[in-house]
Image 1: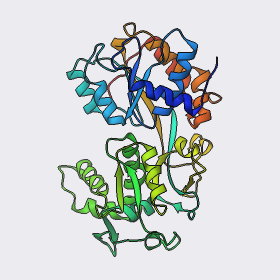
Image 2 (image 1 turned 180 degrees about the horizontal axis):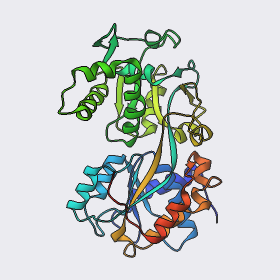
Image 3 (image 1 turned 30 degrees about the horizontal axis):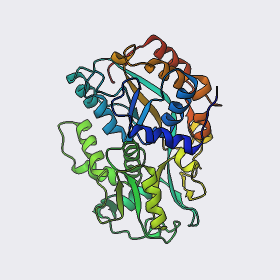
Image 4 (image 1 turned 180 degrees about the vertical axis):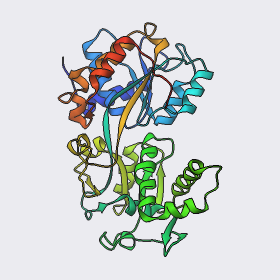
Length: 351
């Protein structure tokens, strides 16, 4: 098989999505901007190697994609939702309400979340505590919670560069934001002692609810311009950094690896993000990548199951395939997912 990976070819698939409309001889895919380039690579190769047209691939964010996926069943609804975070109970409830009752959950690999700045700027060695200390709305100081007034990174930790704090982070509709909040912000909040202070004043009927409310308090970020939500994809974040070279941006590892001429990546807890450090569970900020398939559309939408099977093949999603070449960390349990798709097994209840 021929796996073309040129950027021009990838852009052609994206351009197709703007004009294809509801042509239901094509598989329709929407969702995560992180998963988008992987789907684009597969869609292109699928169109080259099968007697089906290339699927229509669109972005828009994980949450928005899952919501669109759950609009219903039929030719006027999408077949696949790409997602950089796992589907939620509220998503499944929406799907069920609209008649989407059997969903196949496909985990196809892993990606890291990295912090990067202008390639010509200083090096950063971050911990979650640094990120929370810079961006949290309230921080711990002398045993109390105070409004965050840090203006430069070296005010958070003298070992960091004396550079103004400005961080472009994923907006709340992105799956990346969920992982950012959980593995960086809440983790950093706990490391600094702020979580204990929030917990001491948290309301709730039991310890679990109080802890959840403390987590929510940790996730309240500054609104003074130091922390800026980006609702677009990583190209918008990159453009913002190009316009303000003192800024830090949050990216998927694969995006960074394809823009090393423009970006300098930070370490996290002393670990350089890479496919190897993620596979070895050394880099602390990583997450599985998914797409969700509407089982009711298999056998109805031409090429749907063939596309999913092709996507998960060793030649595509394996450690030596084009997705790994782009930056994906191959799933060591890929064979089990392949068997699940072959059997068309829908996902069970969320734990």
